[in-house]
View 1 (spheres, rainbow, N blue to C red):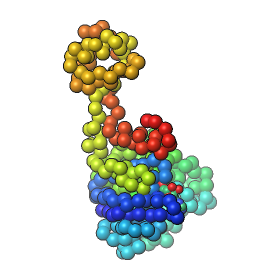
View 2: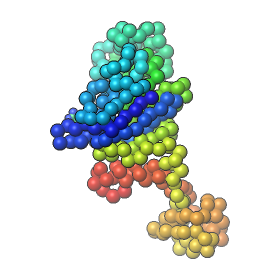
View 3: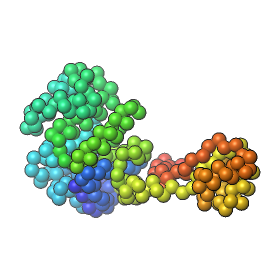
View 4: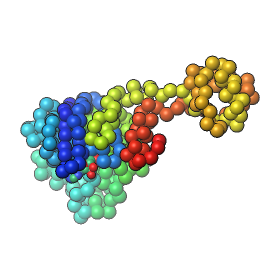
Length: 296
Ligand SMILES: Nc1ncnc2c1ncn2[C@@H]1O[C@H](COP(=O)(O)OP(=O)(O)O)[C@@H](O)[C@H]1O
Ligand SMILES: [Mg+2]
């Protein structure tokens, strides 16, 4: 269990983290989402005792990281996939970590297999791609089979197949009872994995909710058609609320079958029919755009 309470960190005039509170629970993947500069890394570094909070608390199983007994066995972390000795092979890197941390070395090959590095185990890390380094960072994080995992942007540098793999990997760990906290600035990376989502912007929590709740906030359908005027009129007759934007209709009050029937009645050819963006996507896009100073 991870508990962050009223956590605050100022770097001079910059309020990197500003009264942040949330929890990440065992058996769940908690997505820690926010645009760049939102304060995610600083929060994770405070959880790991790498940065001292200005005020508030960051606790793992009720204790500060520095007070944990045998922290390597309690928390696995992957912050940035750097700092590997380039001349070492992946297997040697993990062995060195085992020796330095008092972890049995016999789990090294299994962890290499789990993270898809079995075939690269004997290659020097200096020649690894960013994606392979991310996998090695993950392998290092899970080496001691800790019940709590803290991962900072682990999908960075992974290709789509790697991101798909990462989702399954995190799901598997959470299903085994692990508390998984994973940050990202890309919604799609956590959208399909997280059980719970904490969205941050400018050091503050903006939303903290089960993923299902946020995704369930989708309202209405997007319909694109070659005959927008005819279809809009027919949908209106069917009792739907229609907002027209060129060939795109945003429709509520009518389900997909209703749109299909209206299209048939109006003789309208549909070129797209789907759900409107979920509440999660909307919230996240608005935040990201606000940070970039643009419009969603
Ligand atoms: N060591 C530091 N010194 C000064 N400012 C920092 C430091 N670390 C982070 N910041 C600032 O704190 C804010 C939050 O950064 P960070 O936690 O890295 O956000 P994120 O990981 O969400 O992108 C940013 O404005 C960043 O520039
Ligand atoms: Mg960061």
